[in-house]
Length: 381
Image 1 (cartoon, rainbow, N blue to C red):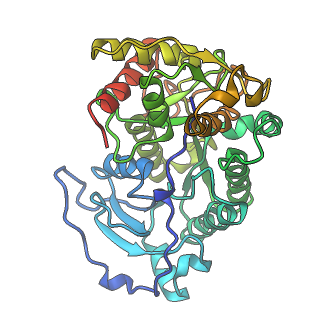
Image 2: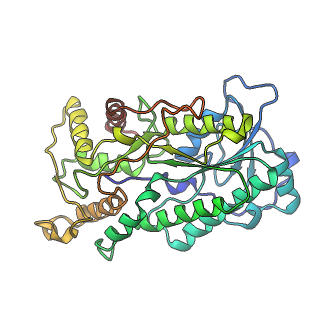
Image 3: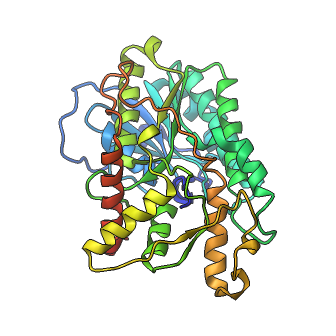
């Protein structure tokens, strides 16, 4: 199973002319009570898989000013076009100062996440863009909540395993991880007060599995549902996953803490399942169990750990259909980030952040996976 950060739709690459902040119009408001004078959160990535859920979670307590890329947000109260890849986010000095003056907290959920992007694109948006958001938070004198990935902890193992991937493999998650680690270092080197949120694999919403865009984890659910007899990961590797609404609840709790008592804001928040995370073998078994309820019977796949031997060493590899070899190669690339079965630490269930979610149990983690499988079986988008 391939861990997938949010897709490239979270990127905000389109350059735009400097806007007039005074002319920013409020978008249609959704239902929900809001304080009469709510704090203002500057939010990037508000239309992405993670950012959309974060915007929903923030809406009741904050005035959301979305730093908009290519699409309008359904949950923001107001928007301003920006370009993460440009100096000062594409704003002139006056617009930048006005934006900083409005902020009470900055939440950075935007970035590039396609495993086939090149290093320059990753650096331009993920690293330089994050540095600019830290500069904005510093100039505003407010905290920055920066969403990264838990898999930066596995970067050395991923680097070793990447050497065994086929040379023509288009997916290079190591480049993505390197950009996320560099982004963490960039915001840490700033003078802003920063909380780094490290989520693991982001899945669909709790209970329903709904997501506005399918993630790579859904692609591998689909692959297992076809009855494929091979899975390009180690059976012992843990596939740590968190529902996107659970991650969003944590980010909203951190944002509330940031404006009420910033001195208590943790430097890092691990948004992970931890010991509750299933192994890849347990993942495949749950997919089969859920599929059986829908009338499908799946054979248990054979596992081939690409960190231990090359895909070409799998018996009968060259006789597999070319399309299947390509899919398995991409899966193998993603599995290089999973480590060797280590358990991520988790901040869920702690007391330092009021309103943050409880820790996941193994049973709840499998129920969440069941919901994602059912979402895929129902033809989820």
